[in-house]
Image 1 (cartoon, rainbow, N blue to C red):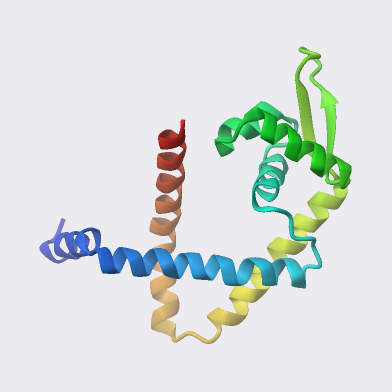
Image 2 (image 1 turned 90 degrees about the horizontal axis):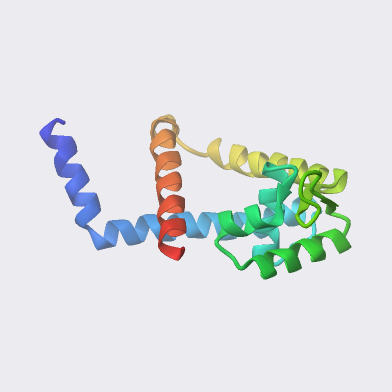
Amino acid sequence: MPREKTHALESLVDSTDAISDFAHTIHRLDRRTHRTTLRRAEVELLPSLVGEVLDFIIDHPGCRIQDAADSLVIKPSNASSYVSTLSGQGLVTKYPDETDRRQVRVCASKTAAANARRVDETWVSIYRSALTELAPDDLAAIQDALPAIKRLGDIVAAQIIAQER
């Protein structure tokens, strides 16, 4: 690794101010856009963990409630309660597992899938509009950083899951 990159890495990792600035920036971006996105997409704001369970179910159709609980590191009883809430709102369907009738499987309803598509389209619209305000060098920097940011997100998620188990 070239000396300049090694020095930059050491500076970022060792700088509490830089890490704090990065973390707060990502957090602000998420908070500021999340509620706006749901409002513009005309989708009801769900409590945070209920929304996470729904997102998991959308991404894993036919999953068991236990799968959602394990992935999100929440108690199975809480995951079951959240699924019941979602079912009551018509956002998921519960059905017994074909091989083990004691297990319940869930899938997102057409309404939930349509809501998720509208939310995704709204996120893209918000960021597309903001990106048009940036200089070409900033756009290139963001494009170049995307793979590393995605890897960072995967690492953070894996570390959190490992620490909370």
